[in-house]
Length: 215
Length: 295
Image 1 (cartoon, chains in turn orange, brown):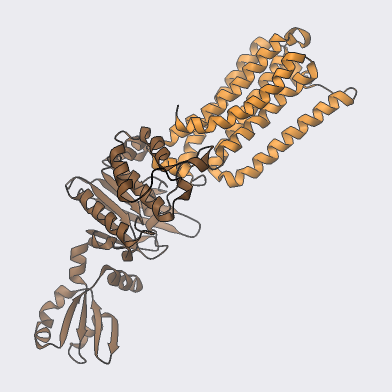
Image 2 (cartoon, each protein chain N blue to C red; image 1 turned 90 degrees about the vertical axis):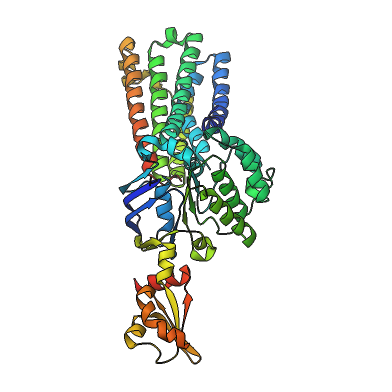
């Protein structure tokens, strides 16, 4: 395995295992409020994995080796894309397995796709910003982002339980509208995500090659 | 003769420092020394040449290739030692040993020579089982040098490689560098303080001052021009005396540094024969100090 990938993937996998514990609980219990909050953790989880994997990452050393910046960018961003896709697929499979598609309609799958896509694009964006501004600067930003996402998720969870009439994400107007044509929404969502991701890869290659902030 | 490294009009800008218009050619079999005061830009030039910090203007071609197109191929053929070497860390960073590092690095290089690497560790007295974080600054430098020498590099780009080394390892390094270029097919670019002894082996000399090259010359030619002139009062023509720099007037005799000894040679011959004037070789350190003060 590529050593750069091996070093980073450890952090992504440890985060994944914790998250999978939550998903497993849903697969056993099958209650809807549990599933509602599981996707909301994904953006925070991806950003947190990224933050841990970038701590003490030896870019200065890697630059002395015959490793092109392009290869590092593809490895790092490829890992984020793969993990984002893995979360996406597992949530979709879990929703299918527990029959959520029939219970709440296609909005569930649109919701899962949206959250995974946004989460992976934000994490990829953070990765490019780390190369541009350095991990020292970006640590605060990512910690605040992760904290805000987690707090919002917990507030949402508590509100669903204790506040009558609190809206579930799958019932929000935008999600419901997108779920109106799932056969169109999903390909467009995947296409736009990959397009935006490709743009981030290109930006990452330029930024990584020209910036010394991460060295 | 083929040029191994060709740099043209390099520029790189920082908030408080700019490198401007640096050009140099490195021929096979040569050791090019970049010298200058602290903050003159030596490390910046080295970083640009080794593609650690791309230039904001100008171009670098190594073995006729550009980093933009052939970064991997070039880095397989150069050995780079930074001023403060850093090494890879893993999730279990505390347990990373020198031997582990070699295993990590080996697959990246097309021509990694593990036997040579361990022979160099042996020569430098670096224990391969020692943890990287327990190495001293000098040992880290020696480890970086061993890595740079162990993958079949044809061009070494070194930033103060002798800094932090004691006299034994400094001598070993100088011998290694001499041997490296001895067959005429490889070359070294080294940024250093002249006091580190690398001035003794450099055959092309560049002086940097405030981000610019202020002198570029073959070392032997340079030192044949620069000489200390020791003279008794009144022994020198006044125009010769006025042309000297670093003049010291002392009760037991005066001395001054000339940058144009070859032109003065004939005019001094009689005074030298009479014992009123003595000529002494200047060191690169003398020349650099005088040159930078003059600039």
